[in-house]
Image 1 (cartoon, each protein chain N blue to C red):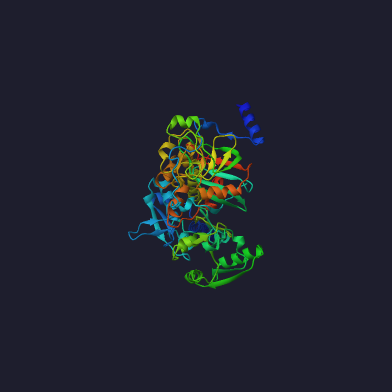
Image 2: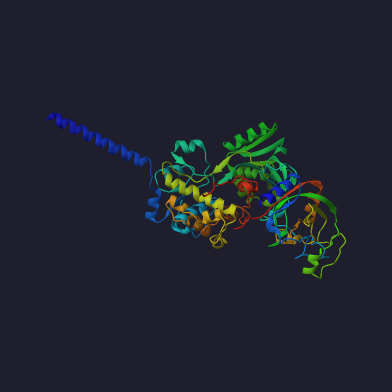
Length: 346
Length: 199
């Protein structure tokens, strides 16, 4: 009798432990983001509080930017409605925690993909949306068009950043001498540059284009095409939710493939009538690739119709159609001098 | 088909000219619509920043010195090596007059004369039969002849048409840019022309 009781107790304990373990596993690994998103009727996107070109709200609370449009593309694929993307502004230091605690479904917040970020936070960066990197700005009057001509320069740089270390590496690797002119605050670095205390200013290229707008005569300054470090900006999702990760990844790839195939928000109706096999597979008139993602066949056509292809999103937010006017550079398609390359949809 | 393909590859191997098969209607040459022979270039025209000569990041396996033309973006790239290129703004062929292929520069000329071909005279009978080189000439300050075709990379007397698609298949640069490019590329330079993908 006592024995049976003891046995029962053991079994009970084992079951309890199993349930608890399951709960912990569930707590740690969420695998239902897509289902929850559909049930709730929106996609929650963690974005930067205000970074021109990437994500910034206007006085009516309408968001614009490259990162914002990427989220709208995800919403368009799921709901056929880009307005179902809801934006949650997050600070840099809280962004990963907020994603982990499921306050947002996805981070689309100018976040650099690195190994430790992926492993330490149990996160996953599905694909690179924007290749940023460190570059140099200098007065146009200096008539220099290559970073290799910057020997013996006084370099304005922000203190305590990887930017400083990258500059040191670059000058050493190319046997060039330089002098650091550094300040803790970026505004002070810019001021020093503008008052002529240094020959060149180094920061991430996207940042240089934004900062140049604040100079008295922006067109008197050029940003060199050279990129000396890797800052791959990518959306972020939680690990172990493969369905959601796939959806986010292929949303980006659909936009890149659309650009390569010449499909835009303006000619999408024409594309739906195309007889070219790779166009047909992308817009869903052949095959049912969307269904593998838990979406309808026209998932990619929805993205292109509502938000546009990769090039459209780039030019509108940070390229020629924007105030920033950042050249495509590394973000050109692989077939046009850049490294944006998407696996085929087939 | 196989024979045709074989022929094409032979042409590539001999450094010959290939035009894609879809170009049959783009027989035309030299400037036409939008050109006004005799008009002196308006020096005050300011190019949109994206069409001004600029050094850009451009990765390619093509050797330095190669010219790559992207008709879609209205850009001409001169490959510099080290992942860089010089980029110039261009005007391109209008709809139906765009083409793609691989050619070589076979001849260079300063302030070229212009002899509009018969097809062009048929389309635009008001054009002169011959026009001596000079500032009012639609071919502008320099011309680089592509293969044995009627296409050229040339200057213009209409700087305001840079960034547009109005020519008969030629590529036009503002006179300052075409003179700059002219100094940088010898006869024999490889020219790759890329067109936008079709749906």
